[in-house]
Every structure is written in structure tokens, then in C-alpha cells.
Length: 298
Image (cartoon, rainbow, N blue to C red; front, side):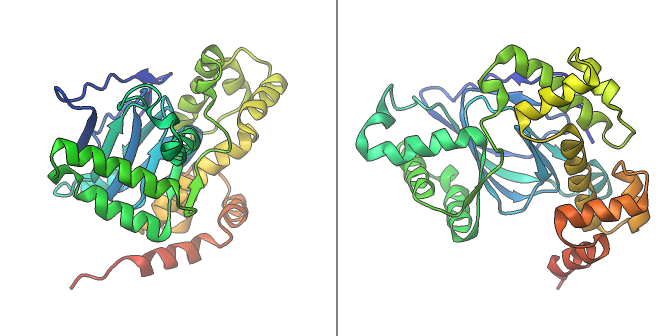
């Protein structure tokens, strides 16, 4: 897994000359940085293997997923290096739409007719993942957006946002707005914890190590982390390891014991217990079900 910097970088997005929104493909570079930007990002993953890091949320990419990432929410998408090393002819493919909240002028979304979209963009500060028929329909429309002229692209983007705003088929990616939108100094400290954990979760990590990153004692760090994330550090670390284990299980290249240790667990019994708690199934059953979902070659 790629190493991430100690804090998210501000990414300057320059739209094409005389255009208000950016419509682009995304093959996810190998050194994709942990970053944030004022532009809102609407994303459709056409195909890809890897992991999404959006605010405090960590989960495997899903082909067909539609995500909406609010302004200044730190995020990155990391390729599965092992998979693409074995399949160099394949590339991840996504459609990404980026736009500022005021791209149609200050106060545009304040008027009553666009209030649902304004509410949607506020909800996007927690990161949104759309599901069901909503995701399928939005994905089809986003895939065609690059074929439209500039005016049509803006109108269609508004129409898609309105469609998403009125749907109940979504889930939040974070329990609350990402911490960097509240206190910049505090967020820089806790971002060090996120990035250190992403780099080292497959190793033994002690509370002393992560507490030192924020200049806390272990006990004070535990209170600090839970106040800002609504979960304990151990919960966060376990969720990251389980997410990575799921990815390895779906690939089907390793046995359960290898997945256990590759994911950062040092005890097979503990791995089984935590996996069942988080996924409501066993690692072996999860792997079997994952393989059944893979379409057979014709």
C-alpha cells in the first residue's frame, strides 16, 4: 500500500479555460496523494481494485460506486499494487466531476428551487455513497457527461445533483463532518495519526507510538481520539485491518492464515473473532461469497 504524507496537501484544481466544472477520467496514479480541495467531487468508479480513504472512512473500492465528496474533505484512492503488478494490462477507470459550490455564482443554491442541492452539498461534508437504482442511474448519466458540450455538461450536472438530492438511497461515509473542517490545527495533529496508521497498520502499533504523534499521554490520546472520531483508536485500527483483509480475501490469492498476518493481526483466533464482529460472517464464507460474485469468463 502506498505511503501517505503526514498531512493532506491542498490540491489546486485549475478548470479548463472559460469552463466552470472539470469533467475527467481518472486512472488513479500510483502515488496518489492524500489531499483536499475546495472543489466538490462527484465520482463514478467504472472499474478498479484498491482502497478509498475519505475523511475517517476506509473501505475497498467497488466497481460501479457513485460517491460525492464535499468541499475540503481530505481523501485519496489507492491502487491495489499487488493486483496491478500481476495485471499490468489493466487500468482503473473512473469519471470524476469537480466543481466549486459557487461555480454558478454566489448564492445560486440559496434560492428555494435549488435548496435540495444545497442540502445535498452540506451532507457531502460527511462523504456520501449512493446505492441501488440511484447509483446505477447516476453512473449511466455520468459516463455520458464527457460527450456533452460545456453548456449541456453544466445543465446535466445540475440535473444529476438534483436527482441525487431527492434520493434516499445513500449512506454517509463518516459519522460527522471531517475534523479538518472544524479546527485546522487539531486536524493536522490527528491527520498524523491517520497517515501513520495507514503506513504501519500491518505491523504492531502501540498506543505509546501514536500518542507521541499528538504529544499526548496514552490515556489522554485515547480521550482525544474518541472525542474527534466517535470511536476508539483500537476500533479504527481494527476496521482498517478488516477492510484490508476483505480486499485480500476477494482476491483469493492467499489462505486465511496468510490474510490474517498480512492484515496486521498476529493471532488467528482473534482475527476470526474480529472479522465475525465486523462482517457478520467468517473469513472463509466471505471469501466464498466474494468468488461467487466474480463473473465467469465466457
